[in-house]
Image (cartoon, rainbow, N blue to C red; front, side, top):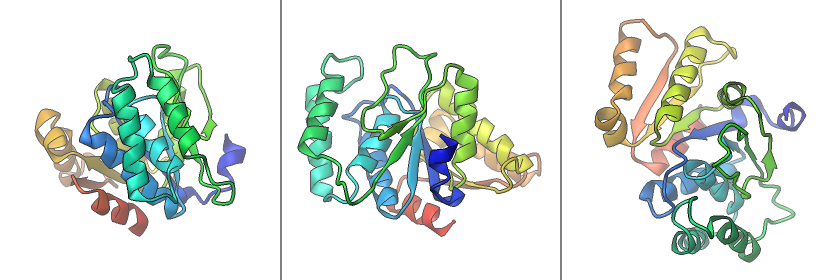
Length: 232
């Protein structure tokens, strides 16, 4: 994995975290896919936990880089109509159908890295990830995702696992573990300010100096996220 990552500048590796339960029919799934598509086209290597939900959307967007927005919407519709959830029987076969209809361009060299874990055996790995590094130990796997994403982490709505990764990233930035303070971008104003009010909590801790070196942003805009990452 590290040999593979050595082909990229550290600041060009960007991660997206989010829930495995995110349905393909959810508007956030589309937002994540379009964020990933645009960043991949801009030269970024997209990294996720390599599973379903927001993770699948990350790699779908990277897979569809170089194609039109209409083609990505068509791919999302194919997935949504066949199997909205990873628990549905056609979840995997519908992904292969999209890959067959929209094969990777051999010349474009668009790639993405999925880092799943054997711990969650009920979560299938998404085939849209061109490269997969699968870990037995989930704690090491999560630390790897946070550590390699020097170019920033985008947090889509998620549950306990995503919350854990938020504070892993905050601690890493606080101590400058990787020598840099990477952006922490939260996708979903309602979710991260009210449903799970972690954003105002981090803002308050940063303002009082409890956490240092945090580069925080809360937004609902795909364009804002892409610009923020590219400015870093």
